[in-house]
Amino acid sequence: MSVITKDMTIMDVLKKDKEVAGIFMKYGLYCLGCPGATMESIEDAGKVHGIDIDNLVNDLNKYFESDK
Image 1: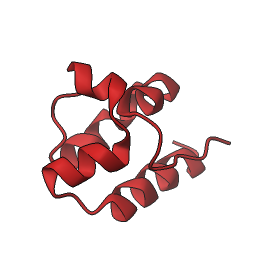
Image 2: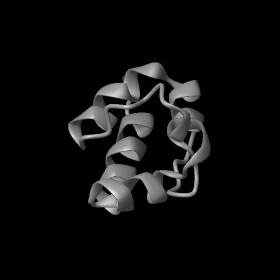
Image 3: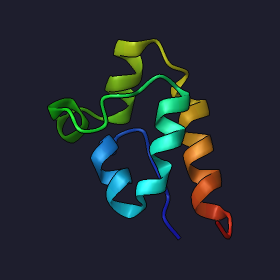
């Protein structure tokens, strides 16, 4: 099972399953292919965009815990 943490980059998570792109977009993170997605942590991106990081990480983990 994958555990997503706020210190991972967006690209780290997308590499596990590209279907999570919709979760990132739900939170307003649309630049999934930009350089920041490979360099900034989820936490850093969340701070820049004013996103509730804990909710985002929880939603990502719920996705990976589900049977999809």
